Length: 248
Image (cartoon, rainbow, N blue to C red; front, side, top):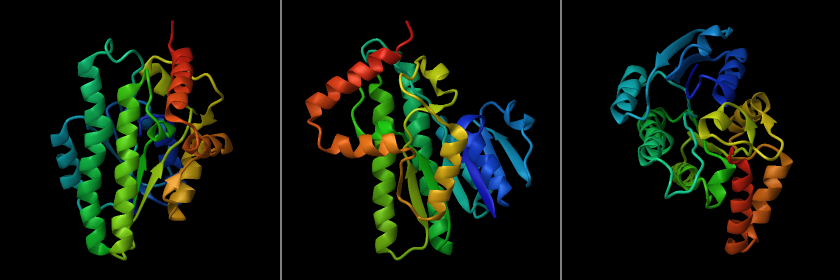
Protein backbone atom coordinates (compact mmCIF):
# COMPACT_ATOMS: atom_id res chain seq x y z
CA UNK A 1 0.00 0.00 0.00
CA UNK A 2 1.34 3.43 -0.92
CA UNK A 3 0.40 7.01 0.00
CA UNK A 4 1.35 10.16 -1.89
CA UNK A 5 1.52 13.30 0.26
CA UNK A 6 2.07 16.81 -1.08
CA UNK A 7 3.42 19.57 1.12
CA UNK A 8 5.28 16.94 3.09
CA UNK A 9 8.32 19.02 4.05
CA UNK A 10 7.08 19.92 7.53
CA UNK A 11 4.07 20.29 9.79
CA UNK A 12 0.90 18.31 9.13
CA UNK A 13 2.20 16.74 5.91
CA UNK A 14 5.37 15.41 7.51
CA UNK A 15 3.52 14.15 10.58
CA UNK A 16 1.00 12.37 8.36
CA UNK A 17 3.91 10.71 6.60
CA UNK A 18 5.35 9.46 9.89
CA UNK A 19 1.98 8.14 11.03
CA UNK A 20 1.19 6.34 7.78
CA UNK A 21 4.68 4.85 7.71
CA UNK A 22 4.21 3.60 11.27
CA UNK A 23 1.14 1.62 10.18
CA UNK A 24 2.83 0.11 7.15
CA UNK A 25 2.33 2.46 4.20
CA UNK A 26 5.11 3.13 1.72
CA UNK A 27 5.36 6.81 0.87
CA UNK A 28 5.81 9.25 -1.98
CA UNK A 29 6.65 12.56 -0.34
CA UNK A 30 6.31 15.67 -2.47
CA UNK A 31 7.66 19.12 -1.61
CA UNK A 32 9.81 21.88 -3.00
CA UNK A 33 12.25 21.71 -0.09
CA UNK A 34 13.56 18.22 0.66
CA UNK A 35 16.10 19.15 3.34
CA UNK A 36 13.94 18.54 6.44
CA UNK A 37 12.15 15.49 5.03
CA UNK A 38 15.37 13.64 4.33
CA UNK A 39 16.46 14.13 7.93
CA UNK A 40 13.45 12.12 9.05
CA UNK A 41 13.47 8.37 9.57
CA UNK A 42 10.62 6.19 8.36
CA UNK A 43 9.64 2.56 8.92
CA UNK A 44 8.76 1.89 5.27
CA UNK A 45 10.04 2.65 1.79
CA UNK A 46 10.05 6.32 0.86
CA UNK A 47 10.40 8.09 -2.49
CA UNK A 48 11.20 11.80 -2.44
CA UNK A 49 9.89 14.09 -5.18
CA UNK A 50 11.12 17.69 -5.26
CA UNK A 51 8.34 19.31 -7.28
CA UNK A 52 6.81 22.78 -7.62
CA UNK A 53 3.11 21.93 -7.86
CA UNK A 54 2.12 25.53 -8.58
CA UNK A 55 3.18 24.64 -12.14
CA UNK A 56 0.29 22.59 -13.51
CA UNK A 57 2.54 20.71 -15.91
CA UNK A 58 4.40 19.31 -12.92
CA UNK A 59 1.12 17.99 -11.52
CA UNK A 60 0.59 16.01 -14.72
CA UNK A 61 4.19 14.74 -14.68
CA UNK A 62 3.81 13.61 -11.06
CA UNK A 63 0.59 11.77 -11.87
CA UNK A 64 2.06 10.08 -14.95
CA UNK A 65 4.91 8.77 -12.79
CA UNK A 66 2.59 7.24 -10.17
CA UNK A 67 -0.48 6.39 -12.21
CA UNK A 68 -2.19 3.28 -10.78
CA UNK A 69 0.48 3.03 -8.06
CA UNK A 70 -1.18 5.06 -5.28
CA UNK A 71 -3.75 3.97 -2.68
CA UNK A 72 -4.00 7.23 -0.71
CA UNK A 73 -3.67 10.76 -2.07
CA UNK A 74 -3.22 13.56 0.47
CA UNK A 75 -3.30 17.06 -0.99
CA UNK A 76 -1.65 19.18 1.68
CA UNK A 77 0.60 21.67 -0.16
CA UNK A 78 -0.33 25.30 0.27
CA UNK A 79 0.43 28.64 1.88
CA UNK A 80 -1.28 31.82 3.05
CA UNK A 81 -0.78 35.55 2.84
CA UNK A 82 -2.11 38.27 5.13
CA UNK A 83 -2.80 41.92 4.33
CA UNK A 84 -5.24 44.29 2.70
CA UNK A 85 -6.32 42.92 -0.67
CA UNK A 86 -5.53 46.18 -2.46
CA UNK A 87 -1.98 46.07 -1.07
CA UNK A 88 -0.94 42.40 -1.25
CA UNK A 89 1.25 41.21 -4.11
CA UNK A 90 -0.82 39.87 -7.00
CA UNK A 91 1.89 37.51 -8.26
CA UNK A 92 2.09 35.95 -4.81
CA UNK A 93 -1.70 35.58 -4.73
CA UNK A 94 -1.86 33.98 -8.17
CA UNK A 95 0.88 31.57 -7.14
CA UNK A 96 -1.23 30.75 -4.06
CA UNK A 97 -4.26 30.02 -6.24
CA UNK A 98 -2.13 27.80 -8.48
CA UNK A 99 -0.90 25.78 -5.50
CA UNK A 100 -3.89 25.87 -3.12
CA UNK A 101 -6.54 25.32 -5.80
CA UNK A 102 -5.25 24.19 -9.19
CA UNK A 103 -2.81 21.59 -7.86
CA UNK A 104 -5.51 20.07 -5.63
CA UNK A 105 -7.97 20.09 -8.52
CA UNK A 106 -5.62 18.47 -11.02
CA UNK A 107 -4.24 15.77 -8.71
CA UNK A 108 -7.67 14.91 -7.34
CA UNK A 109 -9.08 14.70 -10.86
CA UNK A 110 -6.32 12.46 -12.17
CA UNK A 111 -5.90 10.06 -9.26
CA UNK A 112 -9.64 9.85 -8.65
CA UNK A 113 -10.01 8.39 -12.13
CA UNK A 114 -7.67 5.54 -11.18
CA UNK A 115 -9.42 4.99 -7.86
CA UNK A 116 -12.89 4.86 -9.42
CA UNK A 117 -11.79 2.33 -12.02
CA UNK A 118 -10.49 -0.08 -9.38
CA UNK A 119 -13.20 0.95 -6.87
CA UNK A 120 -10.86 1.64 -3.97
CA UNK A 121 -8.72 4.40 -2.53
CA UNK A 122 -8.75 7.41 -0.24
CA UNK A 123 -8.31 11.10 -1.01
CA UNK A 124 -7.75 13.56 1.82
CA UNK A 125 -7.83 17.23 0.83
CA UNK A 126 -6.44 19.58 3.47
CA UNK A 127 -8.46 22.77 3.64
CA UNK A 128 -8.86 24.87 6.80
CA UNK A 129 -11.46 26.30 9.14
CA UNK A 130 -10.96 29.31 6.86
CA UNK A 131 -13.04 27.40 4.31
CA UNK A 132 -16.26 28.13 6.20
CA UNK A 133 -16.29 31.93 6.08
CA UNK A 134 -15.00 34.90 4.04
CA UNK A 135 -11.72 36.17 5.45
CA UNK A 136 -11.01 39.89 5.40
CA UNK A 137 -7.23 40.52 5.49
CA UNK A 138 -6.68 37.00 4.13
CA UNK A 139 -9.26 37.19 1.35
CA UNK A 140 -7.46 35.05 -1.22
CA UNK A 141 -6.35 32.35 1.22
CA UNK A 142 -9.84 31.91 2.67
CA UNK A 143 -11.28 31.73 -0.84
CA UNK A 144 -8.85 29.01 -1.89
CA UNK A 145 -9.78 26.89 1.10
CA UNK A 146 -13.49 27.44 0.45
CA UNK A 147 -12.92 26.01 -3.01
CA UNK A 148 -11.22 22.90 -1.64
CA UNK A 149 -14.00 22.36 0.91
CA UNK A 150 -16.80 22.83 -1.61
CA UNK A 151 -15.45 20.63 -4.38
CA UNK A 152 -14.41 17.84 -2.01
CA UNK A 153 -17.91 17.60 -0.53
CA UNK A 154 -19.47 17.66 -4.00
CA UNK A 155 -17.21 14.84 -5.22
CA UNK A 156 -18.13 12.79 -2.16
CA UNK A 157 -21.80 12.94 -3.04
CA UNK A 158 -21.08 11.93 -6.63
CA UNK A 159 -19.15 8.89 -5.41
CA UNK A 160 -21.96 8.00 -3.02
CA UNK A 161 -24.54 8.06 -5.83
CA UNK A 162 -22.22 5.82 -7.90
CA UNK A 163 -22.05 3.33 -5.01
CA UNK A 164 -18.29 3.70 -5.21
CA UNK A 165 -16.02 2.44 -2.46
CA UNK A 166 -13.64 5.34 -3.07
CA UNK A 167 -13.69 7.76 -0.15
CA UNK A 168 -12.82 11.46 -0.07
CA UNK A 169 -12.43 13.60 3.04
CA UNK A 170 -11.81 17.27 3.74
CA UNK A 171 -9.62 18.26 6.69
CA UNK A 172 -10.47 21.69 8.13
CA UNK A 173 -8.23 22.44 11.12
CA UNK A 174 -8.06 25.71 12.99
CA UNK A 175 -4.69 27.11 14.12
CA UNK A 176 -1.94 24.48 13.99
CA UNK A 177 1.62 24.90 15.18
CA UNK A 178 3.42 24.72 11.81
CA UNK A 179 5.56 26.87 9.50
CA UNK A 180 2.35 28.46 8.11
CA UNK A 181 2.70 31.60 10.26
CA UNK A 182 6.17 32.40 8.98
CA UNK A 183 5.16 32.06 5.34
CA UNK A 184 1.94 34.04 5.77
CA UNK A 185 3.73 36.69 7.89
CA UNK A 186 1.20 36.42 10.70
CA UNK A 187 0.84 35.21 14.28
CA UNK A 188 -2.04 33.15 15.66
CA UNK A 189 -3.86 34.82 18.53
CA UNK A 190 -5.41 31.62 19.96
CA UNK A 191 -3.86 28.39 21.15
CA UNK A 192 -2.70 26.13 18.32
CA UNK A 193 -3.07 22.37 18.10
CA UNK A 194 0.05 20.31 17.51
CA UNK A 195 0.55 19.17 13.94
CA UNK A 196 1.17 15.63 15.19
CA UNK A 197 -2.26 15.51 16.86
CA UNK A 198 -4.00 16.94 13.79
CA UNK A 199 -2.20 14.51 11.47
CA UNK A 200 -3.14 11.42 13.49
CA UNK A 201 -6.70 12.63 14.05
CA UNK A 202 -7.17 13.30 10.34
CA UNK A 203 -5.78 9.95 9.18
CA UNK A 204 -7.86 8.02 11.71
CA UNK A 205 -11.04 9.85 10.67
CA UNK A 206 -10.20 9.36 6.99
CA UNK A 207 -10.03 5.59 7.48
CA UNK A 208 -13.43 5.80 9.21
CA UNK A 209 -14.80 7.49 6.07
CA UNK A 210 -15.46 10.81 7.81
CA UNK A 211 -16.27 13.41 5.17
CA UNK A 212 -15.65 16.65 7.05
CA UNK A 213 -12.82 16.42 9.59
CA UNK A 214 -12.53 19.25 12.14
CA UNK A 215 -9.96 18.58 14.88
CA UNK A 216 -10.53 20.13 18.30
CA UNK A 217 -13.73 20.88 20.22
CA UNK A 218 -13.32 24.65 19.96
CA UNK A 219 -13.16 24.55 16.16
CA UNK A 220 -16.17 22.25 15.93
CA UNK A 221 -18.07 24.64 18.20
CA UNK A 222 -17.00 27.61 16.07
CA UNK A 223 -18.15 25.78 12.93
CA UNK A 224 -21.67 25.24 14.30
CA UNK A 225 -21.82 28.71 15.89
CA UNK A 226 -20.92 30.23 12.55
CA UNK A 227 -24.00 28.72 10.96
CA UNK A 228 -26.31 30.83 13.11
CA UNK A 229 -24.28 34.04 13.17
CA UNK A 230 -25.32 36.91 10.82
CA UNK A 231 -22.80 37.42 8.00
CA UNK A 232 -22.08 41.09 8.82
CA UNK A 233 -21.28 40.18 12.41
CA UNK A 234 -19.05 37.31 11.28
CA UNK A 235 -17.14 39.61 8.95
CA UNK A 236 -16.57 42.09 11.77
CA UNK A 237 -15.38 39.33 14.12
CA UNK A 238 -13.08 37.74 11.54
CA UNK A 239 -11.56 41.09 10.61
CA UNK A 240 -10.77 41.72 14.26
CA UNK A 241 -9.16 38.31 14.65
CA UNK A 242 -7.13 38.70 11.48
CA UNK A 243 -6.03 42.23 12.33
CA UNK A 244 -4.49 40.96 15.56
CA UNK A 245 -2.47 38.38 13.58
CA UNK A 246 -0.64 40.92 11.46
CA UNK A 247 3.01 41.23 12.41
CA UNK A 248 3.77 44.87 13.08
